[in-house]
Each structure stands twice: as C-alpha cells, then as structure tokens.
Length: 632
Image (tube, rainbow, N blue to C red):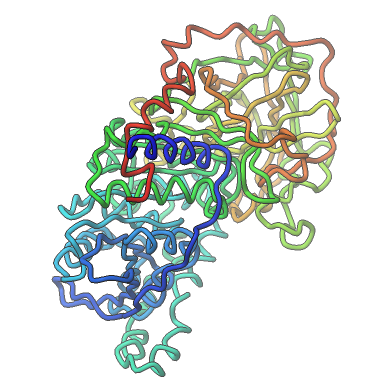
C-alpha cells in the first residue's frame, strides 16, 4: 500500500515540476528571533532567524548577504522559497556580512574575508542547540555570490548550495566586461552596499542598541565602490579579481550544487555558466533560463525544484538519490507568469556542444562555407547602438532599450539566409572579426539576434571587447570561448589603418533559431545601457571597418546543443515577442539575404553527450526517491 502511494506521489511531483505546480497547502508560522554571531577576529555579524514550529533541532538554510539579511532572513527575494522551507521543517537564517546592515566591521567591496567569514557562520550555526548540524547556503544574486564564496572554504557543516544568478568571476563578468569599465554596476553598488542602513533606526527602536553603534564605523572613504573599481582597471591590478571567485575556485566546492543562470541577465550576466562547468558533475544540477536577473524566484516550477533540492540534502539525502535532470534549459519564459513554454532536459552536466562556424560573405550574409572573395564594411564610431535612455523610453529597464530605432551607419549587420530547420545554440560564442580603424583603440559590442518571419528581430545575447585588450589566454581559450588576459602588460594599442584580428566573446546563451527565421550579428559601439550595464567606452569618434574574405575570415563560432528531451509546457506554444522575458523585439532594419540556409546534419548525439533517451528514464529514477517525492 505504501509503495503505491509513493509511486502516485512521485508521478505528481514530476508532473508538477515540469508542467507547473500548485502553491503550498498551508502556511506555517515561524518563531522569529535575532542576535549577533562572533567571528574569530572579534567582529559581530547581525543575524535574523526563523525557526519552524516544533521542538527541533532543525537543519538550516543560510541567506548570507550584503543587503538586509541580518534584519530579515528572507532578504530581498527569498521569501517564496523560505516560506516553503519552514513548512518542510527547515530553519532560515539571514546574516549581514561585515560592514553592512547592523553588522560590525568595515565595508570593502568583494573583501577576501567574506568567504572565510561565511565558513565561520556555517560552523557557528551547526553548534547552536536549535540546529541539527546540517546547513545549506542559498540566495539570489548577492547571497548567491556569498554562498559560493563560503562553499569554496569547505566548512564541514555545509551540505548543499543553491546559488541563483551569481557571478563566476569578478573582473570579466561585472567589473570590466571585455576590459571596459562597467560604470553603472560600480555606481549602483556604491549605494546598494548601504541598503541595510535605514533599518538601524527601526532596530534601535526595537531595542537593538548595537545596530546604531555599528553603522557609523562601517564606512571607509578609501573603499567607495565606484572610486575603488575605477582605480583597478586590469585583471592583475588587484588580488580580489582572482582570489574572490573564479572558475578555478569553483572546483574546490565539494557539496551538491543546484545552479541557475539567466541568459539575458542584465546585471551579472551569464558567464557563471563557465564556472559551474568546473563543479563535480556527480554533485551538480543546472537550470538555464531566458530572462532577467533574479526573476526565476517568480516561477512556481523553479521554487518546487529548489525546495526539493534543499529538503533532500538537508535531511541526509545522497547525490545519487536526487534524480532530477542534470540540466534543464527553459525556453520562452513569459513575462505573464515567469514560466517557460518548453523545458529541454539532459541527463549530463556539463554538455559539450558541437562546434559550428558561420563565415561572413562579401554580400553581408553568414554562411557555413568560407568566403571566396573579399570586401570591407564600415560604420561610424561611436554612433549609438539601440541601447540608450533605458529608464525614459522603455518601461522595463532590463529590456536593454532595444526598441529604439537603429541609426543608419552606426553598425555592421551580418545575417544568414532563412534557416531551413531549427538551430539550437548553447553556451558561449566567439565573433572572430577582422577590423581596421584610423584610431589607436575602439570599443566593440556584438549583438546576436533572431530575425523572425514576421520581420521583427528578437534580442538573444551580447558581448564586448576593448580592442587594446585583445590578447588571449591561450590555456583557457577555446574555439567557442575567447578568454582575454586583461593584464596591464598585455594591453596593445591598434596600429592605425592596419587590419587586426579580434575575438569577441558573446556571453553564454541557449536559444533556438527557428526554421523560417535568420540569425544576425551586429558589430557596433557599446554606447548606452544594456539593461543595468553602462560601459564607459572610449569616446573618440572614428570609423571602424569590418573585413571579410579568404585572408580575413570574419566568422561566428558557436555551439549547437545535442538533441534534448523537450517537454512542452504551454498549450499555446512560445509567447509573442513582447511577452518573452527579457528578449524584446523590434522591427528589423535590414533585409534577410535571399534563399535558404541549409543547416548541417547534427553529429552523433551520443558523442555530444547528454540527451535523455526518454522521459521514462526520469520517471523510473524519480520513483525510487521516496523522501523527495512525498512528504513523510
């Protein structure tokens, strides 16, 4: 009888995860308290705690943040998950890192002490009488970054990590994308680092006199984020760029991880994908979605997966028994309810996509065969690409101000003919472009778009490069991923008028270019906002020429995903252009080349590594997992 119940419950859990899930059936009232955690150097970190009803002890999920976790354990966007954890008998504790909120200490952006502090916090939690010795770290954005920095330290009590939309490395992801100063990010963090400060009055009125005394000592004029970031412009300018978080450091994480990235993340980007690839595959599950920074917590489907993951590992579950698909790609996530149109499943992480190359042709088209003749295309720099005046002209500032008209002469567009079949791209891409200019340096932006049959083009992804930062890390670079050194000694000005090859990284993305559509790349200047990202570009006007031909093979090198198991979620299919989360559409300013482009046949899917043979495999494995499938 019990076996039958488990099977039925397991089937509904799977269907709920993939097809949608209902809200919780009851709301448990947690017991709230607060206090201070003493660190080994004497610093006291403010915490806030929610305990489930009952006697305990309980496992705990840590939300460790620079915003307001010490005053609210759900912090900015963890409430929808945190409430469900309380129902599962899991405590939620929020901790404000040093120099923020009501915590003691001095703020220094991306301080190398944050990770070791987090490890001390984990071990302090494990020693409390209300905790059973098991702790997970979780959160969105800032708490996700700190969860990973803590996990790198390998505190013994840590059991799992749930990082949603983190960064993977500081310099390339947010501080200097492509070697260009990210002015908006640094400026905004100057203010956001003090989000918890207004709560000091409230906390003082509630009887916490420590909070009011800690805040005046938190600020050091030497560590104003925007000023400090502007003074360290190279990857070797400051040790934090390599030692705070990096793909190499991810390899130290030894606990199960459910990672998540948003391809069009307008704040931290999607490059954490590369770092997640360094994790132990037997302990890693990944979800990649289209959309904006942090909106994943609006999805009931993702919350169900997140709660199941934390519940499993905080109650003693083993990795081999958590049988969710290793990789889920959500496509067509809608602005209406933040749920996808299609979920693509793979049983392996990481994937190794098949590498394909599209070559620029003298007629401005992109095709799979190398060009037989040469030509030059030019644009004026820096005419604005359609990415300016975000807050004024576009209601949603994450939409990259993509709806502005494309100014003629401000970019070079390279476009495939209409595709004869769907083309699923996955991961990073490299635009290997040959340029010349009378200037000694220019900043380049590459925009990848899908030109649809209705004449509108949908935003897919972007990448950037300051030409003087073109030196490559030969060890880390691959045909699809150019990794630039960004070291001061490697900076090299352009020779005016000389034709120079550059490799521009396009951030990781998963997108299906549908049959009947075309793929297009723009080469332009990064003038204006890409959502939250305003780069401080080289402002000197000039002309930039893009060269194509047998000796100057400008080309797009990208990955094609293996065949997945595709689960349709929406009966009405993909959402309309204006309903797709963070992938806006605009009228196409350029025609599509005549004819059709025959997409090459895919290589052997087994060698590509990772497509599930059938959904039955998922069902069979899931039905073996009693604790995850049913509430005991």
